[in-house]
Length: 69
Image (cartoon, rainbow, N blue to C red):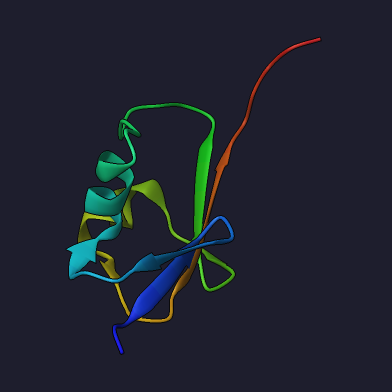
């Protein structure tokens, strides 16, 4: 059985990577504003994305703030 992670409710196969690599793989640019990331219900500061390892069974939530009226 392979290890998995959950990203915004979607179960995915786990692979060794950092949070920054995960986001880049999803097409999210590090400089995008209005973006928040949580790992296991703990916010990961932007400056830590490239140093934070994604581990098996992690639950990751990515939230993009959208302006509009």
